[in-house]
Amino acid sequence: MMATKAPNPIDKHVGARVRMRRLLVGMSQEKLGTALGITFQQIQKYEKGTNRIGASRLQQISGVLGVPVSYFFEDAQGEALPQGGFGDKKGDYVADFLATSEGLQLTKSFMKVKDPKVRRRIVDLVASIADEAAGE
Image (cartoon, rainbow, N blue to C red; front, side, top):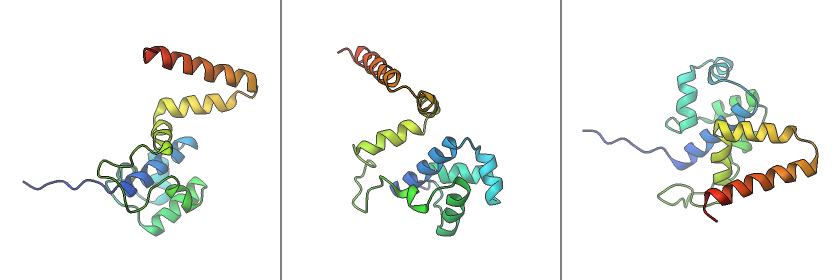
């Protein structure tokens, strides 16, 4: 039986950033794939980190999604990655949260609230709910 190779942590990070940006601009995997001349299944593989994104393809993706190539590497750690992944870096859980549909929806909705006092009340409400759920 052949052992499956785990995706490289950097490939997973870059893929997660592609997914996060694609969702932030409201683009489907199919639409991104069409713009790049590839299938949505290939986009899925890129986003999961199972297929590595080549330099020229990453340049194309950055153009379609409207960000510099460096965007996809923000918050990524260098070569000395721990076995389990990225560790507890603050940016990791933020990226993980924004990669979920709930995180994306919450962020988009929150950004529509312009009044700073209302924003503060929303943050306080969510913190209160979180504290209660954690049993504090």
